[in-house]
Amino acid sequence: MSLKLLENLNNYRFSKQDIDMLIWWIQTRKRNTWNYLNPLQYSVDCNINIETAIELFLTCTHYSDVKVFDVRSIAKCPNCDSIISTEENCIMITDLPKNCNECGLHIQPDFMDNFTDIIFKLIVDPFPPELTPTPPIGVSKQPATHLTSHKILRSDSKNVRTLAGRMRRLNGK
Image 1: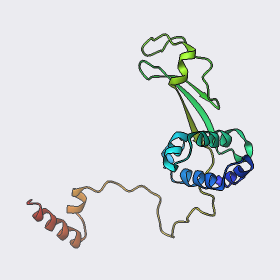
Image 2: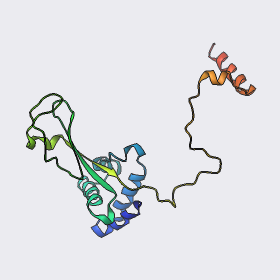
Image 3: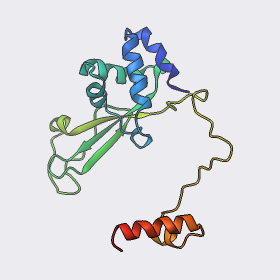
Image 4: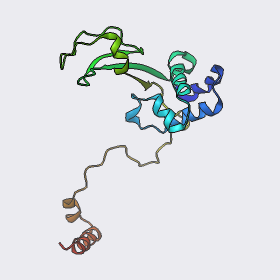
């Protein structure tokens, strides 16, 4: 599945601009944020009404023909900010412990609305296979090791050693 599903949002009375902005916004998020998407950030980044942003995200969570998100609620202690409870596929924490395990604060369930974060997780690949660039032949996906001054100064390349020596002299070493 891909973000192509979002084209179905026009069936839910969202404008083409809203749909295009959401697709653009999702595709510009870094991979390490895909589990922590926030409609309020989307609203700020794209200058979209907050209610529209929230409605878009909830629609993309609830309806199968546009489902690209899962939702998660995280209740935090108002005193020490420790996570008290996490609920998947829910926007309310219903079963709260009476006390925070970290600081011991007694917590009233009706008090928790202001201390429950709602976050959205992207559950589809934002780049369809036809748009994912194929790396040229010979490109490696292996991570590079750290480049240290030791590696430069002990290089097999005379040009590298010469340039490094010049740079050391420029810096007074």
